Image 1 (cartoon, rainbow, N blue to C red):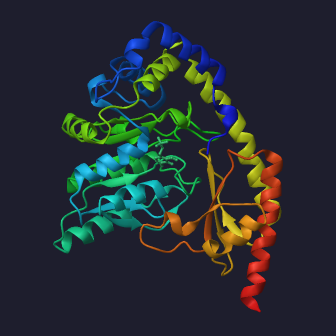
Image 2: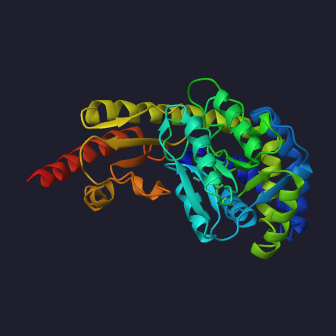
Amino acid sequence: MPNPATFPKDRLKEIMVDVLDRDGDAALQYGNTAGLNSLREELVGFLKRTEGIDCAPEDIIITSGSQQALYAIGKLLCNPGDGVITEDPTYVGAISAFNANAIRMHGVPPMDGQGVVVDVLEEKVRSLVSKGKAPPRFIYLIPNFQNPTGGRTLTEKRRQEVIRIASEYGIPVVEDNPYGELRYSGERVRSIRSLDGSVIYLGTFSKVMTPGLRLGYIVAPREVTEKVNLLKQALDLATNSFSQYVATEYIRRGGIIYEQIRFNVELYRKRRDAMVRALREEMGDMADFSVPDGGMFIWVTLNNSVDTSRMLIDAIKAGVTYVSGQAFAPNGGHEHSMRLNFTFPSEEKIYEGVRRLRSVILSRAQEAVS
Ligand SMILES: Cc1ncc(COP(=O)(O)O)c(C=O)c1O
């Protein structure tokens, strides 16, 4: 979860009152399915400035969070039983959206510190095609500060390679980028969509405003947005109008959104550093992890035989929790890994949590031996 200290309550209160006074009739009414025109116009500028993406308002469709976009894209691009390529491990919400559409996932392991290994990805695509099966319907990637691994960001060279593979085999790329603005160190890498206009790009306000207003968006070629539009008429008619009015002002008013991003980055960088220090001190002898340049997570892999999903109940009893690796496994595995979140707890709680986790792991490991 994002930290509630990053929710811009005062600014939102001001904006909400103004929206109700000025545009109340429209903001409380049904909206159009593709989304509020003024928000799509503001997003064009935001995406150009932050991600170098060139697009027109008509290329954008506003969704109820990017979670709805994942479901819609899965449903539209796949028939039940079709396959897609994902990173392995990958975002648990994507796994559930794809499962809900009976989509088979072909995970690409292993991921090194630079994101998905392109040769392995290409081999996977080639082997699926050569088996005479239908080629994968799309390649789903979280290129920045990947969820759940945190530490993995795809290099620009690999992004270019992914584009080459996608065009060679005629497979669309779905780029999911909820964490791109939350960079604490290192150099920004250009979005895949900025390198290739045929990429389907998913964005969200959840990490730069608040997840509670449930706003995400898809930037895609017209043939995709038109179909999403039809599907959305069945799903929810339109995304929350009031939220969209609020988000428009949030971008428009003297760049509140950019100030907020700077605030979030400063807060989260300290928490990341606290968790990295705590892990080095408390778990350096029992686990591997890499330092994320951004995002919200650290992926920890134990170097003993403890199963993190079985251990979870002990951890909860000890007052600490995590998401076990198996939740992120498109094809099984990751029993000895877990995803830790550093954005929600305070620095003190991060230290205490890691300390408690250490003792839970030690007692589990001892049980396994005896
Ligand atoms: C990779 C990824 N995609 C999509 C989402 C969904 O975000 P939203 O709140 O926009 O639905 C998340 C949320 O954590 C995420 O990590």
